[in-house]
Every structure is written in structure tokens, then in C-alpha cells.
Amino acid sequence: LGDCPICCLPLAPSIDEKASPMMACCSKIICNGCNVADQIRQLKEAQVRKCPYCRHQLPKSQEEAAQIRMKRVEVNDPVAIWRLGVRCRQEGDYESAFQHYKKAAELGNADAHYNLSCVYRDGEGVEKDKKKEVYHLEEAAIAGHTFARHNL
Image 1 (tube, helix red, strand yellow):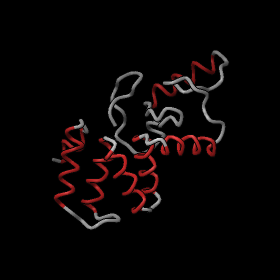
Image 2: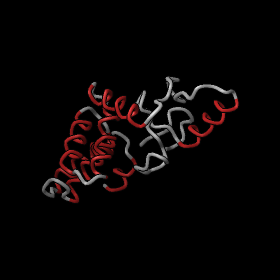
Image 3: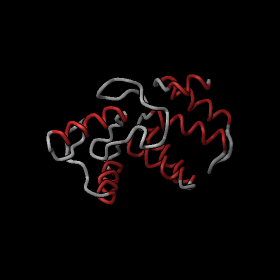
Image 4: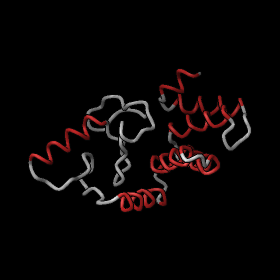
């Protein structure tokens, strides 16, 4: 996942959005510490909740957040596409997850390359393929993905 764009500390290695939530407005993944610190600051100053990174007003509902995320997917935001693939995989829709990972990887997302390597390793929605697994691990590792480097 890389580092938090605010504090530059490593993000929690989890696909749980509560550990490192993705902001719908800018597709930045913020560490939980920065997110909570910003919430406390905004409550103390009686401010409207805004994104800690880009300062856009946060969506008022889950439906509004989903619409904003889909707009980011439509404009080929690789992080939003990768995260949509993660959601599809969690729901058991492996074919859609594979398509989203593939698209995000083509756009240069290291996490998508790593997830593709896992898909090829486990055969989720595709046939197991060791060569493709290693290829995507290498691509993710070159882009700085620590788990990919470890798995190689």
C-alpha cells in the first residue's frame, strides 16, 4: 500500500478499509492515525468534515461515496479501480476482480500487480499460472511493493 501521503509512515498491510481508509474524493489511502487526528481537529474547531488530504467535503452517505468512487473509476484512476477489484474479490466475484486488477495494473498500480499474482497463484477466476504469477510479482516488486519483494 505504500506510505500515508500525510505523515509518510507505512500504511497498514490490510485490505480492511477501517485500518487505512481510501478517501472517495481523491482516492488517497490515509493511515488511521492521520484520519482520526483530522477528525478530532475538525470536531474541536466545529468544522464540516473534510478529506484530510485534499480538503474536499466528505460524502454524506455511503451511496454518495460509492457514486464518487465510480466517477473516479470511470476516469481511469488506478487506485479506485484496484480498490473496486478488492471489493469484488471480497464478495466472491473473482472474474470482475480479475478484470479490475488487470485494468489497474495496466495503469501502473503495484497493488493490482500483486493482487493479480495472488489470483494466478490461487486460480481465483482464472487458471493457475506460475509464469504469470511471477511476472506480476516482479512488476509489483519493481514498483516497490514490499509483500511482492518478500514473496519473490
